[in-house]
Image (tube, rainbow over all chains, first blue to last red; front, side, top):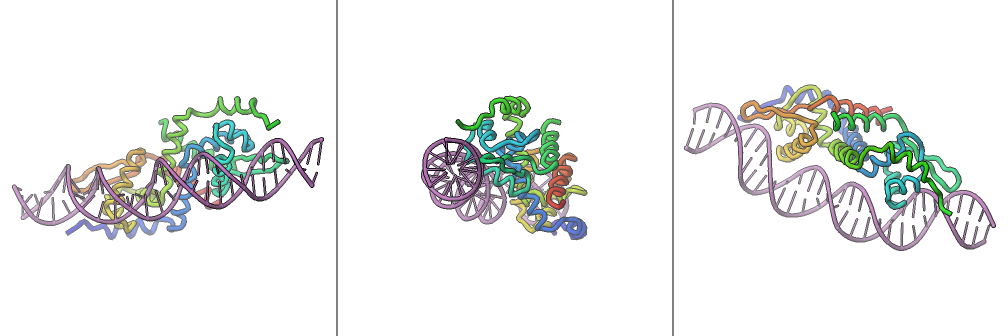
Length: 109
Length: 109
DNA sequence: TGAACATATGAGCAATCGTTCATATGTTGG
DNA sequence: CCAACATATGAACGATTGCTCATATGTTCA
């Protein structure tokens, strides 16, 4: 007779967040799961930056950066303001730094 | 004449971690970037669990869970111990909880 | 030892992702 | 208004990903 875990599962299930939230969490971390986007977030760590400066910094095309900024913005990880022709992006809140910081600690401990 | 940012870039560049670390960070978050793996980590939040219990809980095949546990283990996010035929997995360290916790906060604030 | 159970693994496939390329939108100064 | 600049966007393509299916490995007990 195979292994039984009804009791355990009932308990764990009760403590699990909704499927929707778990999906959203996965989607959020997916945004962190790309080197280009990590670099962009690090670039914005101390101050806002315009799109072409980020592209220069990462030696990538303006288009690639713009696509990634759109992803970051959709996840509310960056925000932007316009000043003439230029659009400046910045980190949207402190969670970005603390999430990356925790990841950094996990890697370097 | 296009927009110039030599000064800014020099400064930002000096503060950026190495490309290798940035790559590793992206790879780490990629592991968090999947609903199945998030669910597994949540299931292990309070206590260790065997593979078949996780499969039951998530209503997925043993094979799918096993593949994902391998990914989690490669990233040092879970650890395991054997007890007879059964193998129990647990969260490897506190960073898992704090990373997920920060993500949770970002979503629900 | 061999049958039953628990887990791991490799190949294959559909789906998703990140970039490029071409082009569109928006802004400013002459 | 139009040329130059800054950014955004859509289609397309190669690469990566997560699952399934079949099967292998490892463990226990009769």
